[in-house]
Length: 179
Image 1 (cartoon, rainbow, N blue to C red):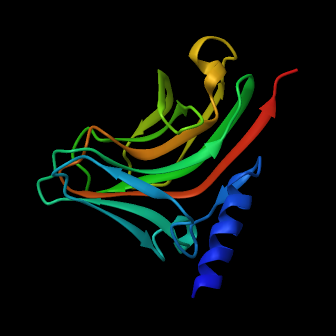
Image 2: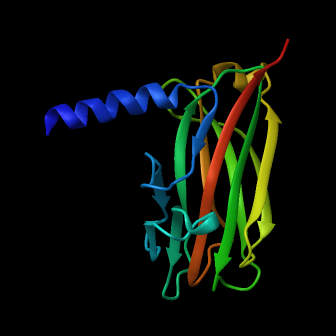
């Protein structure tokens, strides 16, 4: 058991350091963790047939009567002066009216403390049909951004939904260094 766990940790560390990342979520949550606001009623699930083309997907399930925030999250090594592009397929089933699905990034320092220097994000109104969220951004190499060591990616909703499910599938993350 210890050997399998050690291999999983090493493989995850190597995989997380790659410049181009793809999570199709066909088999599990692929090392994504989550954040949940105190007293939120939300579950973080793997939907084996809930993704694009009935493949696997992440499912953020709210309710009943939820009013607090929750999101999936993942840390990526990063550096200032780099352009990043992330894409993810999203859909919502039975979410509250006005709920939007979100893809966002924030900067962290070497201790994984927030730099508190803004959020790069995109969102779309929830739909029961799959739609793509794409976010391209250039991390500055000045000010607080000079201390950047990681980006934290969040997949969630805005505002929090009282009930229903948000699905996320086919996540990609690529880098392009500025010259």
